[in-house]
Picture 1 (cartoon, rainbow, N blue to C red):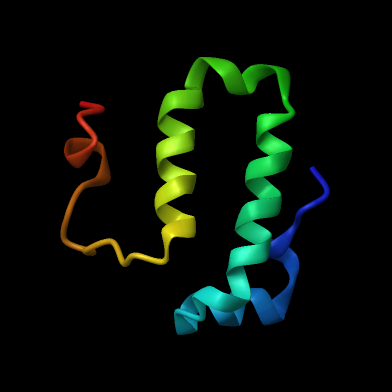
Picture 2 (picture 1 turned 90 degrees about the vertical axis):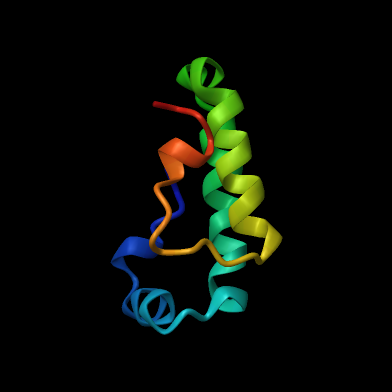
Length: 73
């Protein structure tokens, strides 16, 4: 994958500061790259929901278990 925000200090800071507008382009890039992988299809439904939520700008309540809310467990 070409997207590597996890190794860029300014993006790590943006993540911990909650700077969504800074991170949004990288989230989109990661999603595009993942969709191009042959192994994406088996998990597409769940990953598409996840990335759609990330890019929506909504805040996920930290006390909610994502797996339960999306009926993954």
